[in-house]
Image (cartoon, rainbow, N blue to C red; front, side, top):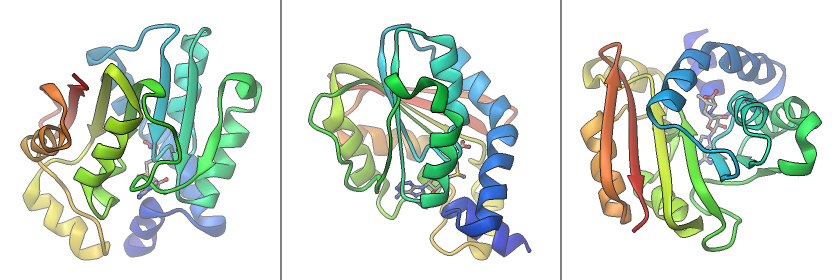
Length: 202
Ligand SMILES: C[S@@+](CC[C@H](N)C(=O)[O-])C[C@H]1O[C@@H](n2cnc3c(N)ncnc32)[C@H](O)[C@@H]1O
């Protein structure tokens, strides 16, 4: 059951995947609220959510920032369907695409901000994904990654049960941002293992 759950965290599919994305919308809310507190967005900024899952964070952004556009991308059709449903009311300033973080289908310098919650664990090449985010951000744009898991010991437990899942420490995430070209990289931590890592495209 745990394996099935993790498989659907990696890529939600079918009925069970649908249940997992809606559970994540609720379960990840405390992390998201803290992340937006330590790394606040401004109204009017355009935002991309990479690995947007059920769209809970897109709704949070769109509700709070009426002048902002917020788009989402996810490679799971189930996540995309759930995000589209959740953000229906804001369709004029929100677009959800089905696509891979490794090859973002957006033009260079499109967004002011990029966010990604609980998704980088599953990316086959995190630096490649972050380079893609760098490409689609405007100069001076900011990226923010939020993770609930940063403990390598506990990471082994999860990674054993979910093929292709890797838990990164906050220092590893910060190093990935540096490798992708970001500067002013900052780490925020709370509850021992939650982290937000942010960086700016110079
Ligand atoms: C644990 S869920 C988190 C969802 C959402 N961000 C949240 O916090 O509730 C991880 C999401 O990342 C997506 N994902 C994983 N790898 C991806 C990739 N390479 N490209 C796009 N989406 C990806 C999964 O499909 C899933 O919806």
